[in-house]
Image (cartoon, rainbow, N blue to C red; front, side, top):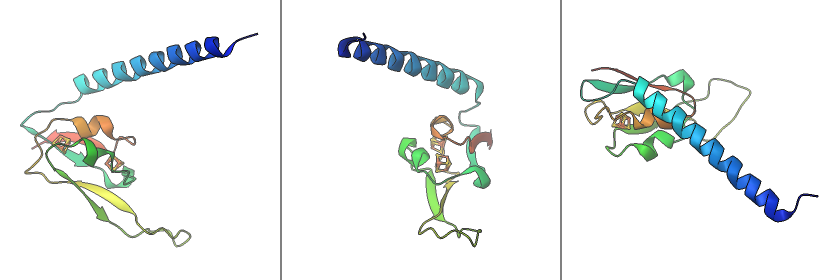
Amino acid sequence: MTGADELRKRREQEALRIRTALNRQRGEQRANTKGGEGTVAFVEERKCIGCDQCTIVCDDDAIELYHVDVRSPLMTVESNRKAKIVRDACTGCRLCVLACPTDAITMIDR
Ligand code: SF4
Ligand code: SF4
């Protein structure tokens, strides 16, 4: 029978394996995403779920959330938000691209 210690050890090993795989994926995504002064982040509104992750990672206050009305008459939600980029403040660091869970942000030429 598997003991509690054994289970804990397996759980820690699995967590490490997942963390390593995710970090590798982020590293590849970062390497494949263009960035720098000549670029600026762009949010595809349709994909944005207003989760606020991008504003947390952006050190340059270059992302703002704004309210939009929900289009569906079937749903009532108090707040439906979307992110938008403050172009002048964006340094092209790409952090928001890596943080966005829905791939709503891409880097475009300035
Ligand atoms: S690329 Fe960097 S500076 Fe620009 S909006 Fe994203 S996190 Fe902020
Ligand atoms: S992280 Fe992505 S989905 Fe979340 S608010 Fe920012 S752009 Fe929208």
